[in-house]
Image (cartoon, rainbow, N blue to C red; front, side, top):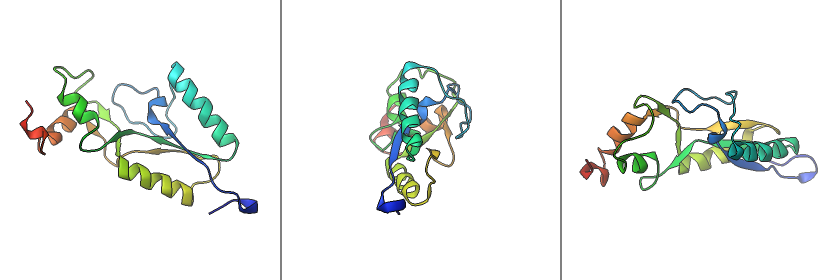
Length: 139
């Protein structure tokens, strides 16, 4: 759908990395944001987009079979962070679907989060990954 005068809708895909939460806790659209330089740059872009009537979709950690936290974790001798800490992720296909849904249904100025329905812990990510090839051969 378009806006008045036939204009279109603008979606900015940002990062859930703007959130201050770093200890594996729950994150929602209303969660506190970080004050790091990287977050500040993204938040400035988000503010410009929403001020102009666009929509922000903050994507959790993107993953595919070949790319994601599971690849990083299984390649490390020791994984940094709590084993029971939640990791918010979203599959690339689901991220694309979230952007399409935002184009169709979001309101001007919305800021949304796209993530899997059930976040996994660091330990669960490794356990589940080891059940499928090629990760089942990793220690």
